[in-house]
Image 1 (cartoon, rainbow, N blue to C red):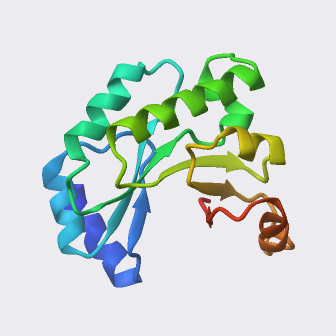
Image 2 (spheres, rainbow, N blue to C red):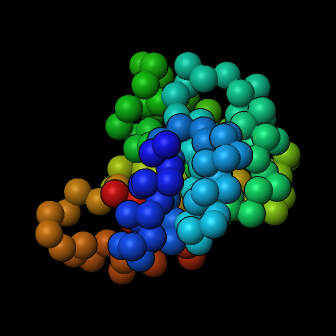
Length: 162
């Protein structure tokens, strides 16, 4: 399948991690990635149309697999409001709720969220169960001051998600 072919390409490229856009619960695929030395940032909640119960099921299904690096909640949810017309505060509250649920189930893996550009300090502080922030940077061919700006905003780790 695609996992064997794509993981070979990723490995040849030197990639050591992949972020999913939805829950990856196929143990065979996770095994293929693990054999290639590729960790998974597993997005277990992408849309507010997904149930909270589905998050718990996805996390419990693969939390002990060695390829799981961290859990991810949302994908630039500040823009898409989790794809269901929520306002910003409700989307923020939902991300907080899901991150807290994941932490209650799995205390071993960090929880990340993916945000479009830089959040406000109040948002970072209100998402106390989020350990790592993924930033989708719309800065052109340079990151500009993204990393310096982040270091002034938070001491939490940050990765460039896109």
